[in-house]
Image 1 (spheres, rainbow, N blue to C red):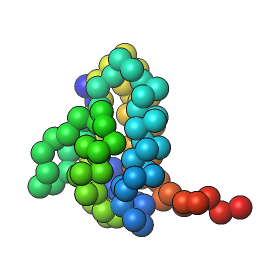
Image 2 (cartoon, rainbow, N blue to C red):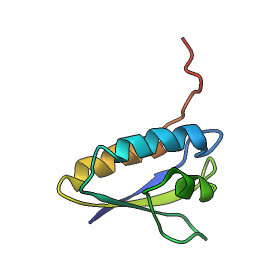
Image 3 (tube, rainbow, N blue to C red):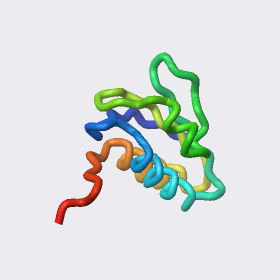
Length: 93
């Protein structure tokens, strides 16, 4: 298992749209297990969009992401990048 600390950068936090993007990426790693830990909240397995939204993650929150599986380093980097992304919905052209 590998882990990484990440700061939430999205100005609106991790709401429905970012959660959807993150969970879609995680589903590309079906034989992996992803967990997220945030201060004052229980460790949560990232396996549902509602579970992620329910964490109530806001901009500036620091979280720890843990991943186990065959390509855990790559999976961790891709998940961590999404948590640290400033999403722009809808995308500006």
